[in-house]
Image (cartoon, rainbow, N blue to C red):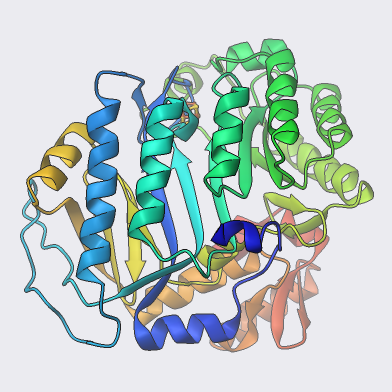
Length: 418
Ligand code: SF4
């Protein structure tokens, strides 16, 4: 299999590759959104729907339909120019971005959600097999699928391996059963560990474990245990996210009602402890929320952070190509109707300016261990000088990087450059 040839290479997106993308409109990075979840978590602001098995077969047809339409529209990379005028989006009258002839030659694919593994084994086989038929995967180096404990069986894990998934991102969140209950997760700690072992036994040698801190009532002791138990499983990658109270979630309402309380000082302690434990255990802190063993940094996420173009497939998925960003309809039924009747799936289009792109590059770059190119911050001499004086920023090999103290204040530092 094409993907297996580069299995776990930990390869990164080269500058040459990015230049090729810009010059030839070759799309190297594809995101696929599967919105179904067995249970809805009360803090979650992603577009998701309660799993309805009567709807998923049609949805899978639609996903492949959109992918094929994109692949067909982009079949001739050498032709250049546009092959259709702007189309009207199905619902809100937004103009679909011009279908420029692009070439889909992914080096990374990411299936996120929702919970992609909430689909049945047969549906995943249909979907991944169809994707393999529709795309040239000869350059694929990383194919990630998000999974939740409770939706991973031995047969499903074996199928994912067989069809070329190289990397699993497992939504553990915590190893504390009380906190898992508070988060509304469908699994407990025991099931989390069983799922991890099922994936290992199936042959996955690149597994990410997602964890959350800053949870209501969570103690430093609980967080230390969660980090240490994660490390003991030896995953190749660990992502740690501080809980954010997103509008339109149950947690947001509970915060507003005074049932929960935010404590930035404790969050900083959690963050410090995370860096200390994971770095001591041999993980490289290569992005504010992400730690990897050498050679296992996520190529897909690094492409996002470095400003590469990407194509999003599925309801609510964003795409950014050149100076245009668009989003698909955030409703899987209307999305499927649109795809299957060959109408536009796009609900909004944004034309980016070079100033917007520059601000994004700075904000995302500063969050990474590589930092942001110094020339992007040239117009902020006072701010950079002040952050250096405060010990939050340093300059190294043509880039500005956050110091250890600066990492805890990454968002505030980035805001100063917007
Ligand atoms: S499993 Fe993930 S995507 Fe689904 S509701 Fe929970 S947090 Fe959201």
